[in-house]
Image 1 (cartoon, rainbow, N blue to C red):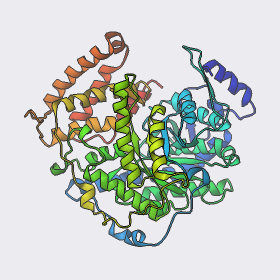
Image 2 (cartoon, rainbow, N blue to C red):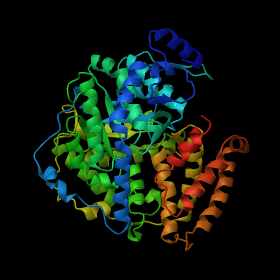
Image 3 (spheres, one colour):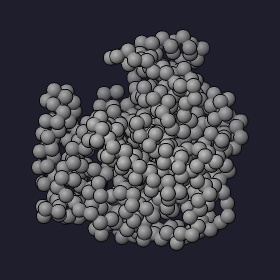
Image 4 (cartoon, rainbow, N blue to C red):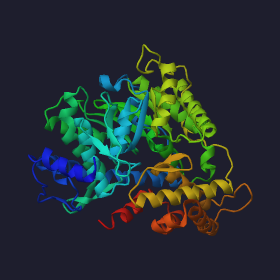
Length: 553
């Protein structure tokens, strides 16, 4: 469906909906987008306003608690399991249960909420599609609004897309994958909607709109309003989400536990509170997920002042390293003890056109997925439909035809995983090639992001915000601790600036002068230079990036 057809579709199909609504406390400031009045109708705005009234004020408090914890770690304290919640870890309890259509999640595909992407992902040989408002979406107002429209059409089953350049038509197959929406993390605001004069939490808006417009249709299809919750750092943040879910269930006269979520364990602080996160959300949660790329980023960010925890090249930090292996095994053991699924991490590879190269890509995917399945994960992620068959075959072999998951693998015979294992750095070189590759990846990703594209194929990998974060924080960490590269060069701010200028020219040569001059590569390089040479680590590159993304809205 073209933009013109989409506009016509909405004017005809939703003419009975109320027009765009503002209230005395909640104001929508974004530019008018086709279909926006249906997304922000009276019912949706009423729910969003009530959620902001009850819960928005707690978000700054939760973020302040993150900073307080980080300050203690910066001053020498290492993360550890919480003594005050030991009773929860030792207790005999389990989650409420898993809906039938979420018991089998052996392969999930992820991607942004673009219309064509949604259709292709739902049609792929996977069990679940995670539609992403977070790391793979640059949240321009247009992308956010259109994403809600696209998901509503997908749930209704009438989503279509016609490629403008080729005329190729895309439609849903009869039996699409289960849909889960990933909302934005607590650190991200939505500048285009204000409550009492302040930007609202982006994740709260993503949740409210997706729930309101789709819960009835989803329940009628024997599915439900399912969500991925990212970037949690503590069980107190999980408790906040539990309160949001409980309030909405009561407001809409739904059974407790109707809303279901999967939480990504993608921050170092959260890995020490997995039992507690499951406990706080026990009525609504069904799984935890190893968000490995963000987890590596969080390891760097959390331990940034600890000189003995500096990581090597990004390519050397693989899932068989001790701290990542311990993380995976502890997540499986914790989840299965409580009746929750344990999802594996992302295969970010993109199938190659060259046959020999593609065979190498698929072998890397096989090795990764076999390790996850052998460990006991119940499913895994892929970033491209072309990897789905490979991942599916491996998990079919391990799960078998008579089961839907690996909840029977308890890992009870494992020795208890101690904090030291979760914090142990991995060996490996810091190479000049690795540093230069990090720079090229970060520049190209940031350039795409501030232009509105959060999911970018670069050098055979599907890069999103998490992988770009690793690229730039690795260099920041090397600078801060005066580390040397394997060739003896001291990593300094000046060395980084020199390499940045050189690699910017290399990027121009790779993509061509016309594409380079039409893009925002210089602006991206300026932002990368700013956040990489700052003495204080910028928490998320998407925070200053969001200001650039939305400055013209």
